[in-house]
Image (cartoon, rainbow, N blue to C red; front, top):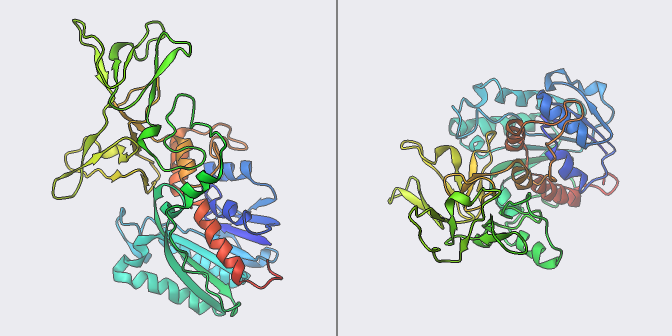
Length: 396
């Protein structure tokens, strides 16, 4: 099968489809130089076809699949909501043109939940009408949430168009299975690798949900290991926690002997985050995520994810409560999600965005941006599995 990946980003659609279909060659279109380079570095049998406005269907060999998550800023509830009048969101017309020119067996469109309500719903139905006008495609769509597969609350519309009548089976609905992750965890007895050295396993390589048991820092102590584990509620010598010479001491649920300086600290088990509810706040506990950018704001509202990450944006300004690096204490018990964690929250392998093929090592700010813009691999895989069930055997 040949795949045309429009607005390809770092390859979430490609990676998800490859888990289900035998993709022979992928043609990808993207304008961000970092995303292009990451794509080159991670995939084989690919051809770069520049911007979507430059692609002509007649110049491509038979395309079986077209995927696109067209720019969503004009539909997003976090944006100015210009809808189809916005310059970026109008790029969907280029994707529709290419579907008409290539006539793939199926196409998948992903976009934000706000598309449903943009301009009182008229924008969404205008897009549906445009797909219908192509002719010959049966359309289905569903609002899917990444948290059904991974610990991130990310609602996105997935619309699939299948050429012809198909088998009569439906692609949607895909049913929520909140135990999807924990069931996989129970089946394996392998010891997991932690996020990074000296990080808590808040979002580990098996993609378990976050929990207070995974919240800790390592404090130097005079033991065989050279450190002790401090968990929420434990006391530590605050001045020595980062020292490479002096030894810190951990009080397991109790304070150590106070001296004249009283330089002890407690790993805070919970904090109050300003939110839009009756109390005006929510309690964030170890393993919860909060909007890192809004933490101290008196006007903007922070959001608390109870053991789950909120929707990643291009800034990935989220932090984990109680999960700290041993060499950095930030606001006593808060640290920002790492690029690796953001990759895992979107279903990508570790360090997927770390290096480009030509640009070399990529900055964390660009990695955060690319992860926030990506489609979730696991959701694409689930959609692809259902598509495979309705396609004629010869196409599979």
